[in-house]
Image 1 (spheres, rainbow over the protein chains, first blue to last red):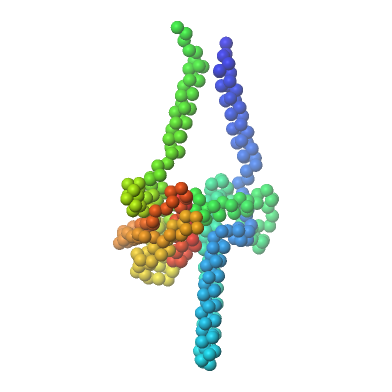
Image 2: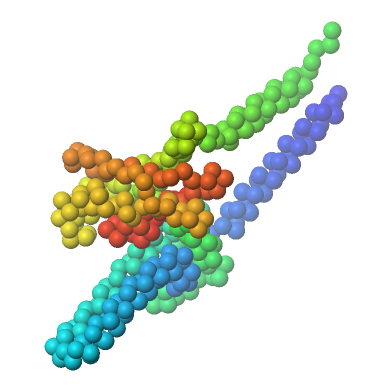
Length: 162
Length: 167
């Protein structure tokens, strides 16, 4: 005769087995292997962007201080040649700032790409598309929009979490 | 004497195995606070392999503890990192080596909460082009053991933006 201990053991194992099978079935049904993110939202919400923006603003402020100081000096001395070269310096600063801005944008995308790649691997995606409004992705169900999840993940990774 | 049935014996063996597994898992989850911790990150074709050696107890008792990091920089495609940095930055390879030897230390920080520390020890290991990657050793003043620390590498030459690694 089957004792009660053995019966409990069978019931517990059956429940665990059913739960595992149900989990695997639901996971396979609900989890698509392709998803998409909205690039602009990732870029705007990425923590690294705000930090690099602060650095860029700091450089711009420094340039402005230098130009203001030189302008006052040239004006007081009525130095026409100096004022011309000041204008050239101003153009040079603007060009440097644009170059720096482009470099920072590249750095931000390098990081975003690296972390999205890791997210895709960790979550078993075959592909993650980046929608940027240019027509490269014309339609996708909202259910496969993983922008919020990816944004949370890439910000954690940026802050150094594993 | 009563002999145990086969099913009862199997249950006992299963219980013992589960108990052993739990014991093993519990043992693994306890982390020695002085053991070396490793973290790595890949961004833009660069790989950062960082080993963190927390300030050792014996030395700390004397008030001289140091948070010690060994940072290995390499390319993910196995090319030489100095040559790569030279090509991407427009600097000569000698200038890149000079930067790694003397200037990179100014771009590495230890963050803990709002506090941001500069390094107090820095050493670049010259490999004389015998290895594709390069190793730097960095030390910081002791950090608060109750809070997480973040190593920040913010180098314009590496051109991948700020890289943070939490320990």
